Image (cartoon, rainbow, N blue to C red):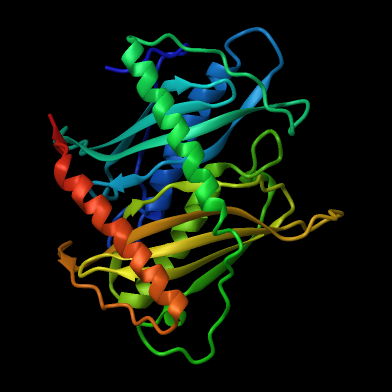
Amino acid sequence: MSARAGPAAIQLSRIMRPDDANNAGNVHGGTILKMIEEAGAIISTRHCNSQAGEHCMAVLARVERTDFLSPMCIGEVAHVSAEITYTSKHSVEVQVNVLSENILTGVKRVTNRATLWYVPLSLKNVDKVLEVPPIQYASKELEEEGKKRYEEQKLERLVTKERNGHIIFPVINPEPYTVGYSQSSLIHLVGPSDCTLHSFVHGGVTMKLMDEVAGIVAARHCKTNIVTASVDAINFHEKIKKGCVITISGRMTFTSNKSMEIEVFVDADPFVDEPKERYRAASAFFTYVSLSKEGKTLPVPQLVVETEEEKQRFEEGKGRYLQMKAKRQAQMPPLTQQ
């Protein structure tokens, strides 16, 4: 049972095309993340404009951990449903579920569940955060649970900011399976098609680029077909304006027997008539797995850590891995729906 939002829950559906997938036919995690963000942006923006007052656009601030429970393939239909489950004075929590449908058999399965947080920004003044209309909860318990999630994500965002000074430097002639061997960067000029009505980048566009870089890092490390397994919390620290040049950088932090954790940073350089210096715009951890041609999980080459800093990041990644492994085992959801 969930809270009842002002606008009805929404659903977006789209068939997966060849350009949505990798060479093995598995849909890119970034494609799914972009659809998730679009659904969240629509329902939160509708809700924030449901009462009389200044018009606004809901902007993505954070995505909680997202697990990719089952790969989606070309020809399947993605059904992305979103519902508002909590509102604070200045933010909206949106729960999103993704189902994949085989349109030949009608069988559906759950592929993703995600929680996103949005803030409403005035269309007249992009630096002005507006108040969010409250929602009606089915019970006091649901409201208290939502408030607890809200306080937890606020605390985690503060912790994440401590890592914002980290920079990924190029390595000359790196050895195979080291951090420097697989680390990668992508440079992108932000254009109008990337942006919202505010002329700032869509959160979904940023997430898709982050997933692309993480995928390159994973593929370089294991040299096999790879797919996104999960994404740890994605934090959007600052807005990215149209005309900026963004650098998305990724590096391997941890490997288990069958998974790889990649840390991804997004840095923005104002490009035209902007006195502002380069800044950290977003950060996250992506987890990938290696697959055979038959779609079976393959062992992952172990990461070779060389410096004390790399060893520390490896241990931190191991802690996240063990924590989430225990949580998944305690809460194994059914993957198939008829």
